[in-house]
Length: 276
Image (tube, rainbow, N blue to C red; front, side, top):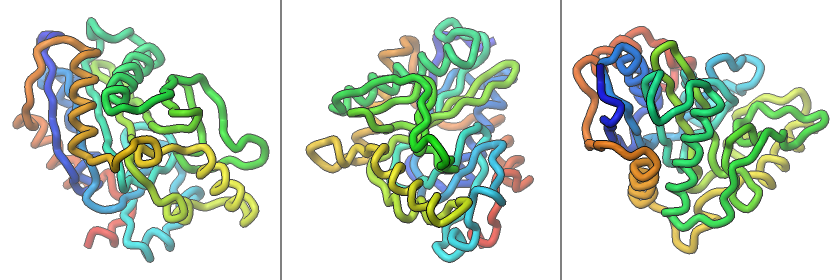
């Protein structure tokens, strides 16, 4: 059994979208089996990639023609939530065993604790007016957007009242995974064009709501945020929130085999033509 005081930090930089999803899932699988310690992984995306939630209906919510025309692959996350275009961002991924001395034994409690670590990281980066909020749909009424950043859910993080971080969690019997996206910058028109709506009017409303309610670090910070700088802030914030013996490391042999298995099974990819 791995000691709860053991923590691992993995900094991967920008990788292929399929590989990113396979690695997150591999770490979760290995942790549940007692083969990996609690792990914070920080990564980016080597090309714009659309991810959709574990149960999201891609045929209903995603405009695959637009994705193909823009050469944007689609991957399915192992967590829930709505569609998100990963482009100019830092993604964090936290995996920990269940039970763990530093986390409550339920989804809500763990989500809240991880969000506190995210806030500590963003404060280290100099982000003001941070708040962890309750559940409140943006663009309520007749518009229901398939975009992740169109809604603010429990324990998600805003800056100046606008959504800055989108996070989701998946729990197995013996481990949980929470990962989230921090927008360094974005292209809202491109992101919105990849999604399907019930009508042109709904699509226009959705874009207006998305732009008015979303915040990026580029808009907040006095200088352009660099991935490496924000990654250092996240390493600092998480290590101070979760004290223990932190070790920079890479995937172990078990995790590498799980990654190969998930990639070989092609379980994450929905739009294979984009990867040929």
